Length: 132
Image (cartoon, rainbow, N blue to C red; front, side, top):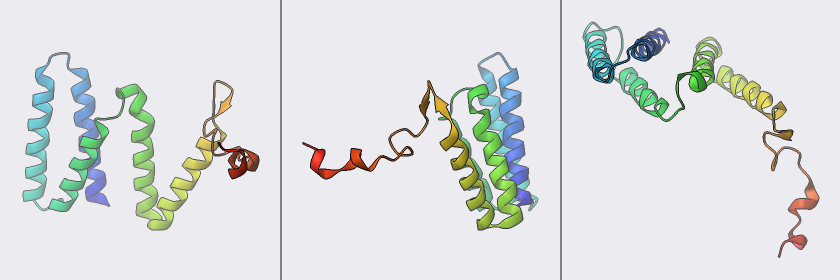
């Protein structure tokens, strides 16, 4: 848990520092700094190879998120899930996912429920007799 938290914090610090640069070489500097920090932390025994691979896959997947301000809730949720998983194990992940889903169910977008086709379940709309 400590090593994952350590790596995720370093990744967030690198992401934050890269957002402060205005030039194009910042992406290259971020990659080089990430490689150096990963190799150094692995060679000192602070983290394992598996943790570095998982954190790298997470970082690559996070590149599909919107820009910094719009992707911030996903990053906050990642650290929240990491915290509860460390405290309670799989039960912490289940509770975190349940609370997140319960929150998403209560949201509305333009006056319509966020999960509109699924959550206000109306059995008549899914009747096989009414389909063409």
